[in-house]
Image 1 (spheres, one colour):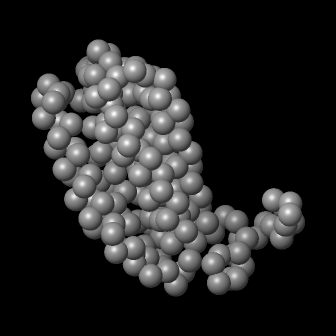
Image 2 (tube, rainbow, N blue to C red):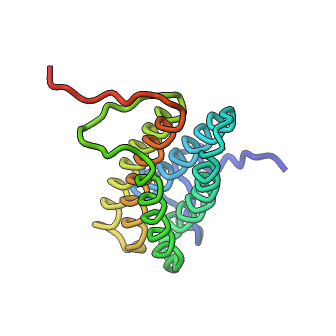
Image 3 (tube, rainbow, N blue to C red):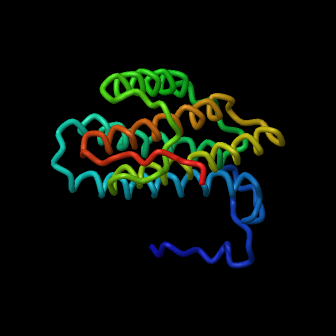
Amino acid sequence: MPIYTKKGDKGETSLFGGIRVPKYSLRVETYGTVDELNSTIGLVIVQSSKLKVKSLKRVKSELNKLQNDLLEIGSALANPKAQPLIHLEKRVREFELLIDFLTEQMPLLRNFILPGGGETGAMLHLARTVCRRVERKVVELASKETIDGEIVKYFNRLSDLLFTMSRFANFQEGKKETIWKVV
C-alpha cells in the first residue's frame, strides 16, 4: 500500500473522525508543530548517542519517553473529541523531579546564558525553542477550541526541562556556557 493517498492534494486534511479541514487550520498547525518538536528531539537523540558520557544516560532515556509522549499528544490534538491524557499530570511532576535532580549537579545559574555550548547542548536549546512555539500554538488553540488543559502545563514544563538538559549536557561535556552581555 503506498504512503500517498492524494486526498490532501487540494489543501485539506482529515482530523480523527473524518472531519475535513484546511491544512493551515490552527489545529493542524498545532499538531504539526508537535511533530516538528518530536523530530528535533530525534536529532538530539542521534547527536547524544555519539557521546560516551555515561551521566547523560538518564537524559537520553527521558528523550525517548518524550518522543512517545509527543506522538500521543499530537494524536490527541488531531482529534477534536479526544479524551484527556490522564498521565500528563504525572509526567509534569516527573519533569520537575528530573529538573531538580539535574540542577543539583550543576553550578548555580546566576546569569542569562546564550544558547550553545556543545552540539548536544545547542540542539537541546533548539528543541526548547521549538517547544516554546508548540506551547504558544497550544495556548492559542485552547483559546478557540476545547483541548486537554494538561497539555499546556506539559509543554510549559517541558521547555524548562529541555533548558536544564541543555545546561546539564554542556556541563557534563565540559562545554562552557556563554553569559549574555549587553553590548
